[in-house]
Length: 129
Image (cartoon, rainbow, N blue to C red; front, side, top):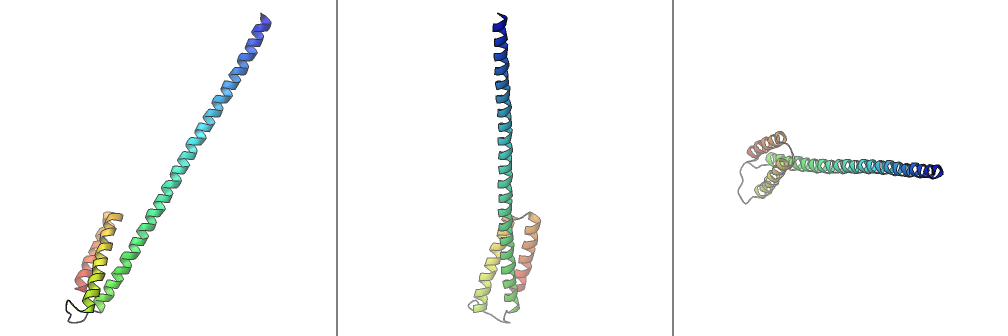
């Protein structure tokens, strides 16, 4: 009986080692998977943030470009003009594009940035017309 109980103890200790090893292996794999998922989420967040930053920069470039075009239109305004003059038609299109760019800034940027863009648009609109 003692030989049998020794074999049982050896088997139980061996089984306990397998269970402990398997449990530790599972915990390590689980933690590694969670860490990899967190790293992937951070990578996606950074990629999204960079994409949004790129969109914002492109929008600012567009707004500045159209604003400069509107300023040039203001400087080239003839002393008298009609609704059918080439200057009026070109300037109207430029001011419409500037208005759209200003509206897009409202969507993409915080309110203080939009307020500054809106004030610039209104001042430039008064200057052009």
